[in-house]
Image 1: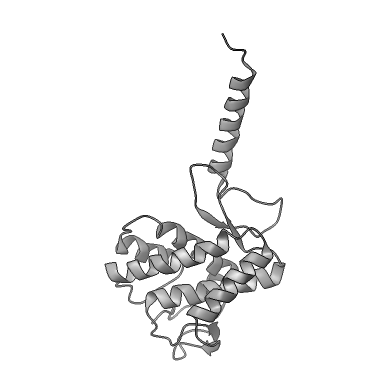
Image 2 (image 1 turned 135 degrees about the horizontal axis):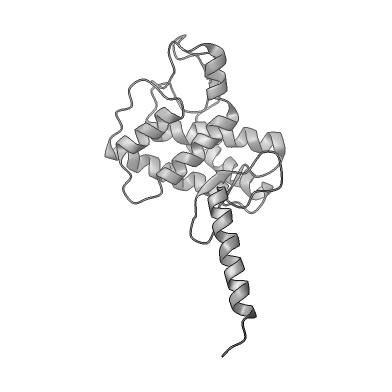
Length: 194
């Protein structure tokens, strides 16, 4: 059901790396946060992250995916590696099938899945594939795979792994907005009362 037919295997693996799947997870968790996300918008986001084939998402599919996103948000909210690992272990135990390899009927390169079969419902696929990607990231770096943006007005999740200093914000825009707000608060505090 979810595969990219006719794509060169090198292209497929680059678009479906663990890091790419973790970024897709963060994007979906954020897009599914509003009360009633549009199924067409979620389908467009899935396409932007490499999904092809039938993407006839219904409102019921999106409602179930929202529940999966709320569970995944716990991993991003984890205060440390142990807490993130505990959250992932619980999700893996309660919501995924056994690890298996699939090529979707020879339509893709072989790759691991934790959903119960190739025609699993969207929410099961989303939760299982996200758990797999976030688990591998934690395993690889021994750090939490993501965070919630530190900007007071944001709340989006993001993949925190990469080079450079530790990230606190989901984007430069949020980081800049917070620096400007802190600067204004500091200036206001420095002005003596009239």
